[in-house]
Length: 163
Image (cartoon, rainbow, N blue to C red; front, side, top):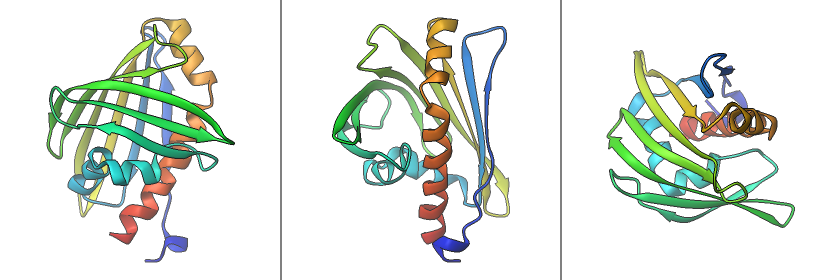
């Protein structure tokens, strides 16, 4: 299957009405271990993370329990930095990390990425981001993150289809 023939699945982004949490659910036509690897290998992350209009530069990436990361999204010459710590990394299964936008350093989200094997070479990624407040959660949603997530996962589909 060539890149132009890759099927892009729907990305579901939902805000919890009772807790300042964002839940993202996405299925991939790739096995769980490949989807997980695309989230822990900095060379792969840089290829798919973010909207089509940005470029991602990985400054630091130590994806292990106790490790940390920093990356920069570059849009029309302007740089936006993001950083956090990996609190738990279980191969092919789970990542628990913090996420901070340098432009709002007091707003730290606790994120959990879980990859589920659906059989037949397919998997489901469920990500939750627990924000400090409803205001922070709503600001994250209003920032255009849905575009970055949707376009990023479409790029990931293409990477996974290439093997």
